[in-house]
Length: 445
Image (tube, rainbow, N blue to C red; front, side, top):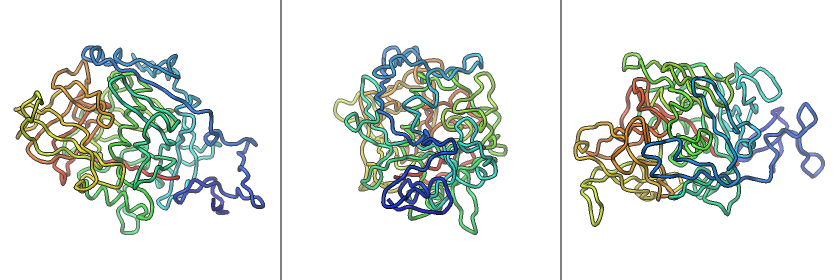
């Protein structure tokens, strides 16, 4: 490890480093103001959490279809029913969350401050960083997670023997941390260079192509792993939200989000950071014009967010024993640096999605069962049934005439179509629109 004496608490240039740690030739832990090792950096004994899935119950009960198993069998979920918030078992001390942390990370990879999870305008020692979070990337940092998904449900673990670290692998390397932007992305002009940032106090950027968002993310520092979040990272956050809420019905469980009132002339986006002082979970289950937070802010409603490194092909007729007349093939990156416009040599066929005849050339909403037998594509739409009040709950906008990018979460004029699993599957790879944005991500050791 290389040591720095730059006055920062924590530093990263491809490796997590503590300033002023070197004493003689050995490493000495830099203690906090209270004389203790900062809790966010203490490795515990690990965890192995399971979330069992019942596909039959799912058709009528999007909450009762999930059951806590393994080491979280006695957990209770986050609930905001009747706008009375209970975080259940999901406190910062919970093993799944204990080693996650919020931080401001500069474009050149310095961890400037580790933040108070209950108030992102402060660091963990109570220092005011309200100005810093308006200019530096505010990120939710997740240690390496080993994941398996099958017909029985999901397992997330800190132990390598329990799965594959999908969200933490890039370029053939497994990173120690995957950092997800706390806020929907904002394009900032920094000395003539556009950069995609995760900053507080401004509204998300829209009406920009995926190609531009991708380049703006890289522009933070082209030597580091800044990027638009990819399918594996989105699926990690989706899974963590499922664990916390124990429900596919995120809007009714935690909050509707900003899901009404938007239009091309008035997107009705809320400023990023309205929930900075609201802890890790916040929302309004009765209103439709305020932000929602489940570990990160506005992962549903507000603005559709591009998911990089995945695409749908144009529709094709069924082959072999496939039961539906038409399909679109869904490809994801192979955990390398493939992107949505460059999947010719680095891609995985995750599954084939049935598409209604009526959606081949003209788009429309469908509600759906989910696929539970594919580890890569677990939780994505499968059978064309269901409705807004049951099953998946969240809408999928489908159009099969050409290759399509994938955007997630919903938008400020979508109402109840929004949610954890909402998908917009109708945009061309080069599309830009008033309702389309992106979210920043960063991989580091």
